[in-house]
Amino acid sequence: MTWEQRWHPLREEWVIVAAHRQDRPWRGETVDDAREAVPAYVPDCYFCPGNTRVSGARNPAYTHTFVFDNDHPCVGPAAPRALAMPAGVYRNRPADGLARVVCYSPHHNLTLAELSPAGIDILLQTWQTQYRDLGERPGINHVLIFENKGEVVGVSNPHPHGQIYATNFVFKFIETETKAGQRHLAETGRVLFQDILTAEVVDGRRILYENEAAIVFVPYFARYAYEVYVAPRATHPSLAALTDEERLGLAHALKHILVKYDNLWRMPFPYVMALHQAPTDGSEYPGFHFHIEFHPPLRKPNLLKYLAGPEIGGGNFLSDTSPEEKAAELRALPERHYKDVKREGASRQPF
Image (tube, rainbow, N blue to C red):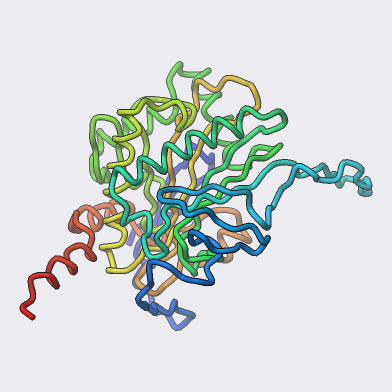
């Protein structure tokens, strides 16, 4: 047994690693892994091409990605300005901004993992356009692009899609990461994330994939069992700053880890994916290194990583697994999606 604390330099917090807890007896709740065949088109899906959304708007017959304003936004341009002032130490302010939905594909049954690298690159181009468009608007200080995949993380519609929150505030983790990067750059003259990449490459055990433009790894300070970072090798403040070659390399890196995820338990792997990009408040952020983080909620096929006493009550994350062991587990998986292998095998069966 080992008990260890590992420093998370981006969040500026300690992560407690107690990997032997992964196999402790469990009689609590588990996740029902019900897998039903999903059609390519669902008549009552609000996101499928040609269908009517809850707002009454009709989707176009889109063929690649489709972006629209969220019908139930968490922030809005019409946020009330005249707010009643709370008493004492309390404060409030308007939650301004725009919320959008990005459908990855017209096909209801295709997840991001099942798109080709070219298809993922089209999505990355869409995200670039959205970041530029929203980030340049007055009063938008941050553009958060993310995906909640799977019922266990609360996705409201299984059609492959992500969301964009363009807000008048900077989300807390990005704010902390930005300040940590600025301070590290001022003290050392180096980009913090580049030092993280150097440490990962030198160690080598947690690297999952590399190409000339991008790298994929389980971070040393991983909090979730199968937490993964996907990053360009060069420092850029946002996805929008990547060249065409860098973006395509990133698409291949994303394809690699997404296939590995699905192959782990031969199921559409749930996760929260977030694009960490610099604020869009008009300031320069030379110490910010754009990257994509995956936070999968499952630590076993049907077992969630529950946030409980240490995380919610104490404020420190307790990891039940070893990042090195999970990286080795992911590396050992096939590089072809299990559905592709299954379809190929079925096509060879005699009639």
